[in-house]
Length: 379
Image (cartoon, rainbow, N blue to C red; front, top):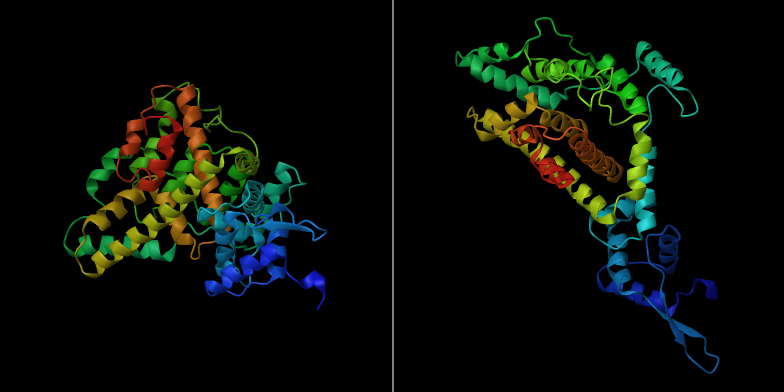
C-alpha cells in the first residue's frame, strides 16, 4: 500500500470516530475538507523520541466537524455550501472560510440579460431592458400560492356579503390615479436599485401597489408617496426622493459586511433569516388551513395585515423561493445586517424617528423586528 494513502494516527482517530457514529470517512476526504478550509489541522503533539518521528492529535472541535461533514456532504454540495451549513449549526468553521462563503453568495447575485460588471451603469441597465423587451422572464411579483390566499380571503368575505376590500381603506389613500408597477417594471427597478443603491419613494410606492393586485387602494403606498410632503427637507432623503444613506452597487456593501461583520453578528443574522422564512411559510400554511375550513382566524388576519405592510415583501420573497439554499440564507442574512445598519444610520441622521411604528403588527416579520432592534434604535 502506498504510504501516502495511509492516514496519520490523528486522522485515523477521526475516521474511527466517524465509523462509531455510522459514517464511512476516508483520509482523502479529510485532506479535501482541510484543503477547502472546512476542517481544522491536527495539533502537533511533540516528538516520539529515538528517531520515531512526531505525533499529532485532532483538535477537539474536529470530532464534531467530521461528523457534520460526513452527514452533510453529498453530490452537488459545494465547499461554500458546506461551510455555511456548518456555520449555521454553530460549528467552529474557520472564520476566513465562513467569510469566503458569504462572499461567494454575494457573487452569485447576477443581473438578467448578461449584464457584466465591466460595463458602465447605462450599459448594464440597457442589457436588462433589452432582455425584458425580448421576452425574458420578468420578476414574479406575487407567487401563485400567495395570490391564491389573497383570492380566498376576498371570496370568503364577498360570499358573506361583506364588501372587500373594506371601503374604509379608501379614505387613507390620497392618490386617486396611482401607478401600479408591472413585473417588467419591477425587474428593471430591482436592477437599477441593485446597481445604484437608489430607490426613489414614488417607485417604491408603485412597487407596493403592484404587489397587491387585488386592491384598488393601498394606504401604505400612499404614505410612501406623501413622505416628502409630510417630512420636507429630510436629512435622510436625496433630491430624487431616495434614501441618501447609500450610493453605488449594493453588492459592494454586502461584500464589506461579509468581510467586517463579527462572527457573532453573522450568526445572529443567519438565525434571523432562517426564522423569517419559517415565519412566512408557517403563516401561509396556517392561513390556508383556516380558509379551507371556512373559518378565518388569527393567521388569516395576520396574513392580510402583513400583505398591506412592509412585512408582506418578506412574505412574498420567501414564497417565491421554493427551495431554501445555504447561499440564499447567507444573502438574506447579509440583507438583514444591511437593513440594521441603514436603520442605525437613519436614526443618527434624523433623531426622533417614529420607530414605535415598527411595532405595528405586520410592519416587520417578528424575527426581523427582534434582530433589527439590535441596531440601537427604539425598534
